[in-house]
Image 1 (tube, one colour):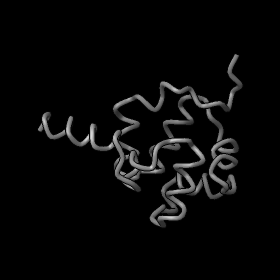
Image 2 (cartoon, one colour; image 1 turned 180 degrees about the vertical axis):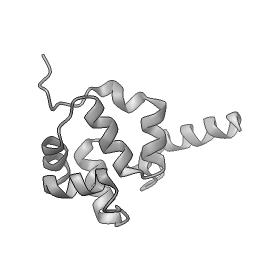
Image 3 (cartoon, helix red, strand yellow; image 1 turned 120 degrees about the vertical axis):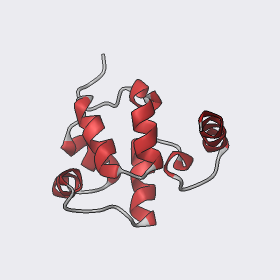
Image 4 (spheres, helix red, strand yellow; image 1 turned 90 degrees about the vertical axis):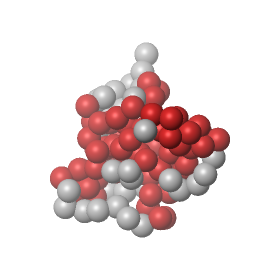
Length: 103
């Protein structure tokens, strides 16, 4: 049985989540995680931030633009760096190719 703050792996396969990650919309990512039952405290612990920082990001009072913070968030949430445009990897290449065909 999964604890309340564990992230359901299927959340990462959602099209809207992948778009949020690709756009580096951290507030949107955090909000979607909350909809899946992940608390702000758990997000903060995973991303080495305070709960108040996570709250400010979700509320739109703080923007995440620093490469170091984006990297820390990707690593803390255990998503491939390429999904946030922080590295070019096989998954990113496949996603780019798929979007190219859909356009």
